[in-house]
Image 1: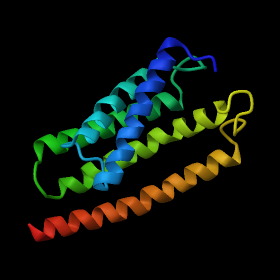
Image 2 (image 1 turned 135 degrees about the vertical axis):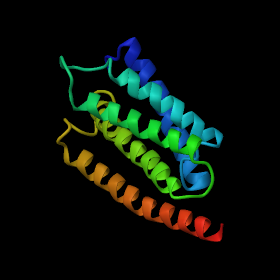
Image 3 (image 1 turned 90 degrees about the vertical axis):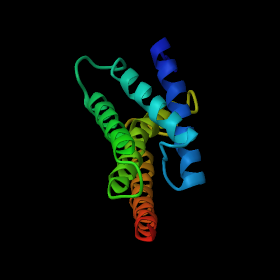
Amino acid sequence: MGLSILGIFHTVIGVVAIVAAVIAFIKDGKIDLGKLPGKVYFYFTLVTSLTALGLSSVKGVNPGHILALLVVVLVSVAYLLYAKKPGNNRARYIETFFLSFSFFLSMIPTVNETFNRIPVGHPLAHGPQDPLIAKTLLLLLITLIVGSVLQFRRIYKINKAV
């Protein structure tokens, strides 16, 4: 697979972040920064995104670097909203969407790298343009849209009750 030490660290931390997000989605329907899976997702995603800046097969800034910086901005703004605007209010919509969208964006390179490397010797995909990658990302996008609608409905009900 040819991963550097930084690449291995980045991958392990990234897998932990993804697992934490999946646990949060299953348990709470969203990434909740007030709960352990949400906290793990936040910190491990920051580390994963920042270490991604040191990984590249090409010189200079590339789309992966921009994606990583966007994820850092999204989770950082979500954390600021969580910390500065507590309670059930409009900030929850933005916070929840930014965390879900950051997860979706994180899955773009994850799907691409995983499908192009595993199984070793006979990867599932052959390059970022492979139809399997496109179909998987489309499924994730649909999941993001449907999940966001469900999250917003839940936030609306909570805000209305308060």
